[in-house]
Image (tube, rainbow, N blue to C red):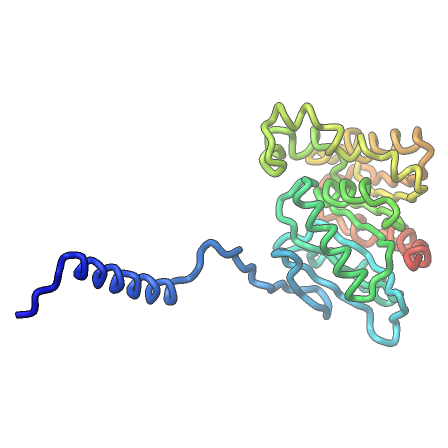
Length: 281
């Protein structure tokens, strides 16, 4: 029988354990790596779906014969699962026919948080530097997309040709409320309340007014989910006080619904199309 000294037995054991560890590591996924996001999304029209810094984004360009360079575009929000939806088809068809692309990015329920704004900045860079889009975008905010687009626009007014909204949320206090929004901001309710002027669209309009960004909203007077007075009404009042130009259409008796008049609003379409020229610069 061959006798192996204790120290040699220990060395052999350590080598075996190391080999086993390496084999296991080679077969085990690295869970410390950033999770991958399935880059899939159903679009209303033909387009491209791609990832931007871990977020699903899309670009629906006009047909080749309608395209110009740089490509004017409509930036839609919120891009959540199921959005944009069939209700937007009527508008989108008219934008595409006029040579405008439509784009968006799923930043989750960000409520306009800094993390959501960072995703928006990443999309803007992708579209303007790699995909031929114009330096100025025409923003189209539906409901809580208002928090997302307005908070980004207030920090990048030079990149905004115009803003249009369909009953957009403009006031965090009104919707979803500070207690619900604070987690998206990584803050406590008290902390977000103390910092609200840094994150609430109605408090951040001065840069947009200074750049003379035109605004158009359509918002029903019977909206109990996103009340007119606290959102589009208050934003319009403050924007005008700052010298900004805003048109506010108020359908009587309409709430936060899928009423076709919100989504087949010729005035909204005409407003955006009239600004697509300035989107080039």
